[in-house]
Length: 293
Image 1: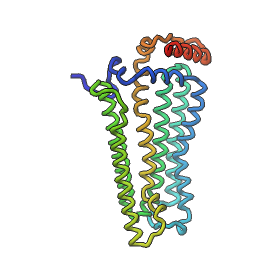
Image 2: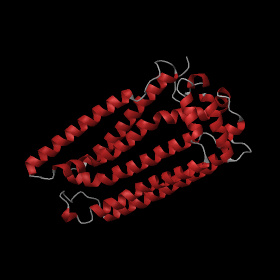
Image 3: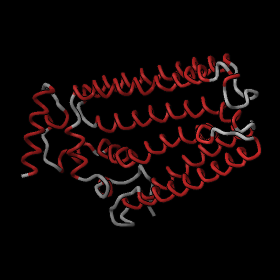
Image 4: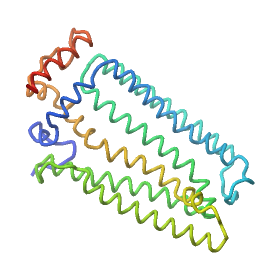
């Protein structure tokens, strides 16, 4: 029996997921002009990650003015080391995105897949850096270094769990084990439940602290106590929104020639061979209009 893997479907099976609307969307967003703006967006998002460590260092610089214990806050040297490490990694990610942009400017096809995977990577990188940057202040606010390790484990577990649920729903559609529908519905229910109970527990913890210690800034305390998880939630949202597009883009790239023939595009329209980008986009628009008619 054939193994039902997320990226192991045949061309015929991939059509259960890759529909006409996605193919049209990918072709409409495959021009060099659009890629230039997308590259700028990816560069900006990748650089936000290391910037988070600089921002946090400024926030915790004067520890005496903070309404939290300063005993567990990381030193300025630690923030600087993390900043330079993440900056180097961000530059590597940016160079890879630039190389990919140059490569796809020649191929002129499947750019949607390239953009989607890298913008999700950039968003995830920013969220990871933000979560790590807040760990120090969160551990200090909760007066427990254990909470730093707890949040790391919780963030990793939630990412695995949500991604696993999305993958399973996509597999069910690919291999026609269930009717095509919004693959995010199940994960949405799970994510909402997890978020609700985590925030309830955090609120209870803050209220207990307020009663015991007389801590007055409840909103500030709640924000600080849950900051790493809140940063990670942006990453979960990115995966939640783009997961389907990533898998669809993968199969459109893998079976590019088959989909070209299926929808009747010429090689000039699909690959842009020996044709200027503006002229290619005009041909695509004409073809798409004929398909709609």
